[in-house]
Image (cartoon, rainbow, N blue to C red; front, side, top):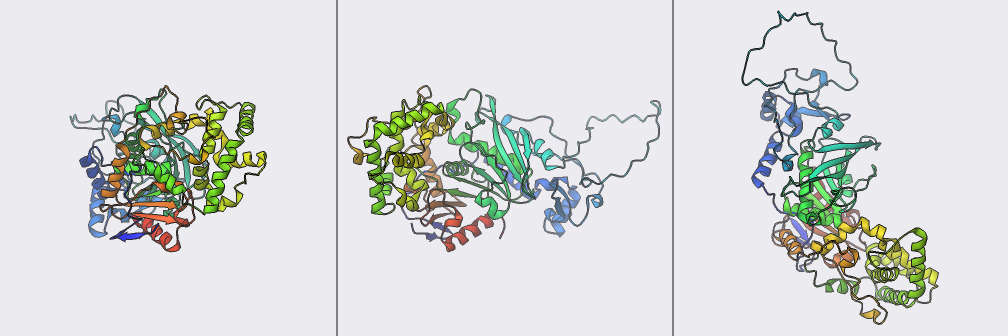
Length: 566
């Protein structure tokens, strides 16, 4: 793929762009979102602890009031730069009347109201208070009656954990040890099942937070599946900007689902709205730049979020995300698999596929025996034989996604022993993936493929006479019959049009040998400050670091610029 420059953006080849799954449209209430955005720029969350007079004075004489603030790294508490907490002004700021009740579930992520100036440093004892004179009830002064009198606001939380817990709908499940200079939290955030009708039930979405500083950039990362929980994990953009990281579990995966899932509410817009609410809630604490990122299905999800909420973040990095705009036509995959790698490697893959089916009885029998020993079943796919055939059909896809050219030498010859052949097929296609236990964990993925994202089926003409189960490649094979699948053909073309006509601050990274590149995202005349980059010889795990040196330097500079690190 060659990179061509369009003004301030770089694009891939001029092939017709496809619909992806990462950049959502504008918000349902754009006026409110823009107003909130401008308000946060004028008075970022950390500055709400500062009296208005100081805030305006700072803005007039020193650029912005933010320049007068520093942050206590231990607690995330704002304090006056160049002073200790004790030297901060003691005059209590005038505060607006706090909101007395929440409006609706969709507005749970409101702004926190602060009560006092900076608190004393952690571990520093406060000065003892003077004893108060005793006042008898008769002598006690009576407060003047005032219809507008309001109780004093409670002091704002100071420790980052307390401030997170104070966010409406947010729960700290656990804090775990993290690297020096970081804190790691497992969080639960209450989300509406249906953002269009927030009163119709909720579920708790699982998140993790790797906290570094309230004023550092923040990266929202998603796999598009169940969330991990490794405190040491930092996505590539997080490392590049040395920022905070929010990792999200996609709705309906893992524990992030209602007790009785309504599968019609598992769609790209609902998931995009989940991310929108998370970002708006946490922006009240994290006032720096925001980025989103993800790979494969997670990359698709980040594009969908930008499509529906394009102003939520300052930039998005997408890795290995397919863009299936026409689910009726899978010939792009057949063409890709017909030219990727060397002719010798492609020929060896076709030969090993045939041999695996020629030896079906012994191979599938061994697979069934393994399943019985491990207590695994095949009720969803129907039988071990059906699961085995599907695993063999997926060999070229999985090989190029995760092995690539480096794995060509390991492809067994048709004369290999059955033990060698079985181990190789298992290593590439992963036999456990097709059992009921594994399929249950990714059922939401196949539901999304069958309703909006689309699913590729591959040419089998070279396997004529060896297949037993027509239609086994269809996505319905993975989804129980009691869950309806009704495909929405307009969903992906809508995403594709947005990327080409309105997408901005988007960086797509693909591996040269990655099967997902058969139907990639492409930019158009309306794309701005965006690029498509190709990592030579890389597979589905391609990252910015795998790009050619000049491309990697340019992409790194772009990500840091989006994060405000010029």
